[in-house]
Length: 177
Length: 177
Image (cartoon, rainbow over all chains, first blue to last red; front, side, top):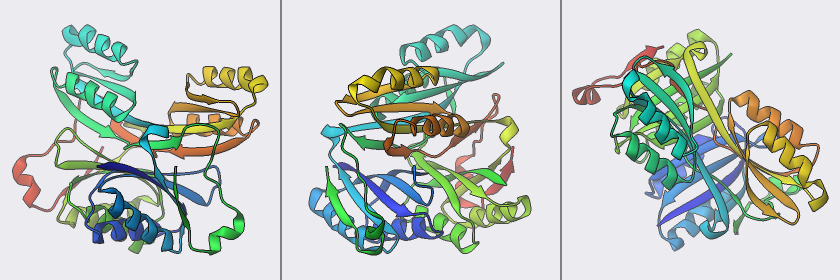
């Protein structure tokens, strides 16, 4: 089963390598990973999509929470979560095929961000499945390159995962929301 | 100077940990990282934004290229690249403030993806600077949570970074485009 883990970490060199190493040693494959800064400049938020059952993921969550740079681990419940992904898809399209590719982009509310004589680059944002669907339809024309960000997610509603300054010094919690 | 590296890798457990470990040992801080599958299911594409000068980055590129799972390393020139990022921003907004937050989203062509009595979640896509600008304006209302994918990038035009099947077995090239 695919699960989404959000991990708040101190933005130190090496933290990514330690988190990735821990997950590898547990034998999980990371399907996607996105790491970006948060509103607090020295804290990054990692979003991992990992394949595993619930008991295994709880164990990984607890072990991640013990890493010194990890401030909080959040095991996100897909049914209360907004999850989105971004992809850039370069579609092969001779000028004669352009209208069809533009129509495909239109259906997905995707933007054309680059045009050249032989190709169009489409920027698409949405759920993992929406991005998959666009890529699968674009194959009909021929795809020359794809890059995907991996999924990022926030819980629905006004609730937020926050922490007090002093919590940085203790073992993190694993929150399930 | 910030540089964008794209790395095509065999999607094996452990590859992320090895790539992150190598970059850490060279003393670079990874500002953002996005890892997702490509159009070839067993190949992932990592996009790294790293701070470093050109000579250092060339060295890192060459060392990454020697890792057994790395198929290709691409040092992307910002002036010939489409680079995009996605962020979900949960903005604190009482019902009376909603029109102002919706107006902000409208200016950035961002979508409101969740509404609750105390907060709105905005999905924004664009360059790193555009995402920064929206976050900075949203601070006026109060931000409860932010998650960013990190930057992904493709070179402009019809050119593509491809490789032949047999290249998987050799040391990778470092391409500068």
